[in-house]
Length: 558
Image (cartoon, rainbow, N blue to C red):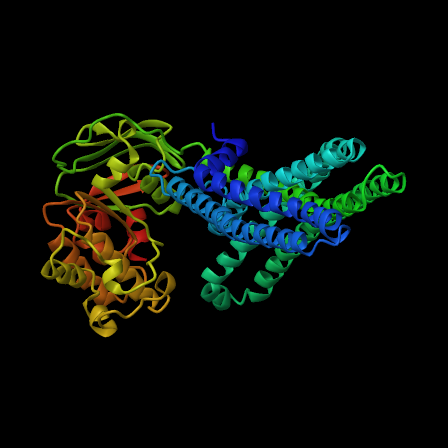
């Protein structure tokens, strides 16, 4: 089972080499930072106090060398750490996309596309940033340890103050990070929901304008955005409270170190140079201790985001894999026997090899349930769906969809040109022209020209043009079994009749199921099955059903 902790471990382990390199170099930087006040103190005691110009030059040279090392180690280490964070985030994005696109489905259940996008971007970035925090935290601990070691060498009481105080500060920082972790997760969830609602509103902008529903849509988004803002402010307050409290405690800690050092100097137990080194080290420790507070905040956010990513990666599949062997070659014999799923009730339906079958389902729920079963987006509660005698439930969903292509009514186009949307390695340019002609999309290709974009989701095209391009894309796949759902609802009657004839000619000898109420499409089918009340109501040719069945006639010809 994928958990948030497992996601965090993967993010670090997958970039172990860069994280180690970054931590080593950043630690070298911190050691250099700790050496600076020590070298200054030794220069005071051995050069300035002794009025030795040569020794002063040597100590200044040593100090310059340390600055050079700590500067370059910081630059290279920071680059390695950021690279580890970016690569880990990239790996998580790939894993999330792979899970969402998994043929078994399930990851998208209960989540809007915008929410999944937010998880794959911002949450993945926050988890990847844990690598940067790990590098910085390791270096900060090394810096504190170096400072404590030097202070122990100068004075046992000074060293003990640092050794005993640092773990206490770290524990307090961890405890103060718990509210931030909870509120950070809530912040991300609200932000993801707001993004999803915004994406939905933009996608349906034309419909909203047509219905005059803009005010209601704006009000819905205003409420969602206000909820997101409230969650963000609560998370910001938690982070500010944590950072402010830890910074105040750190200031008290540094003041305590300086106070102990000053008393020791006043009592003559440390030299002037050692006092300068001690005060300098105390000030230097402010940096690593502040970094630890930042690290705690980043880890809190990373844990919250990792839990959200784990929820997607661990989402149960909509259908099991199946270990059966698909038929080879596929003849295209599809049979549904006693299928109960959704609104379907013991449905019996058969599409023979090479047949162009029409299906009329007055209830949209029946059509949707049928399409989901044929595409194996779900398995029936009862009954079986078979392809050439092999139950689909025994096959991997990817194998099913390689043989049965279900082209949904509301299929979106991809951003890019027409050729990119219709790309198929198995079709020559001549075959592609025939596909465009069969879908009634030939003039669209001519009008667009080479390289012209269809826009995001095909918005540069009209509704009818988008539908014809989507149909051409389905036909270009040349699947053994093609299932089309209302492919011509947005085209005129003349174009629809031309598409009907083209579809029949192009798919001759290949099994095709058209779920529609279009008389033009149904007229070219070999048979039509009427689904009524979730069951098979009747089956015959279009003309026969139109003559003898009142319900069919009312649905198709009204």
